[in-house]
Image 1 (tube, rainbow, N blue to C red):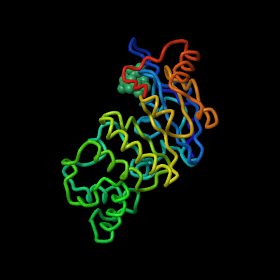
Image 2 (image 1 turned 120 degrees about the horizontal axis):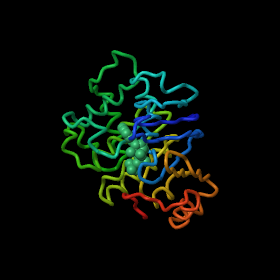
Image 3 (image 1 turned 135 degrees about the vertical axis):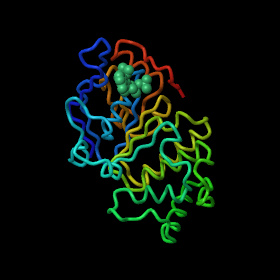
Image 4 (image 1 turned 180 degrees about the vertical axis):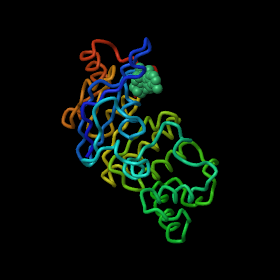
Length: 264
Ligand SMILES: Nc1ncnc2c1ncn2[C@@H]1O[C@H](COP(=O)(O)OP(=O)(O)OP(=O)(O)O)[C@@H](O)[C@H]1O
């Protein structure tokens, strides 16, 4: 499963602009863990997601998934192994391609070279079936260009595409933050269903305290490049937003400074 060992990351080292993004991060996720991550501005959450997904290298330390180092893998190997949904609904899909073409591209991830993107009848039937599970009518729009979809529909499609290959880890990077409340709720519900039914090990960054408490079985708080609190399943059930903010203040010695925080 996911193991992060002594990971540190500095930006602009040795200059007046030096920033400690991550400082000696150690984290182990068990198979099937669904961990929500909250923290103040600049706590290092995005940097952590970038390092786990292999798009950024740590200065020291390493990230292992299923016992294998992420840094040693090629981009195409990582794309099968690590699913990621970003905040920006435009980020995960190709707007000029149809829904079925996007799905076909995702389906080919990690498959042997030569495994075509062509949408065959068999694949189309599979895509229809998968889209039906989302329950938002996309199964009737297989040949619609993705650029015509709403933000919520694109995020639902991104979620499906990022989990198609049954990744060893699913990274959700504030993936509901850019949506209006109703669509955010829809994507949250779909996330829960997909994670539960596929038993995916998941790490989700959110600025929504209520969401961080309600979803998943573990909650991690970050501040100034460190994990300051890791709340296990038995304690997570009793959390409230007030208790969470109080814990943050008690441990960090200051109030949670997050200009995008949503209390619930
Ligand atoms: N490319 C970069 N160059 C220089 N400094 C950076 C870079 N990326 C991040 N930082 C700095 O590293 C620290 C951690 O940033 P990061 O974006 O990981 O935090 P975050 O928890 O995701 O913040 P937020 O919730 O505000 O988006 C911050 O001090 C940030 O200014």
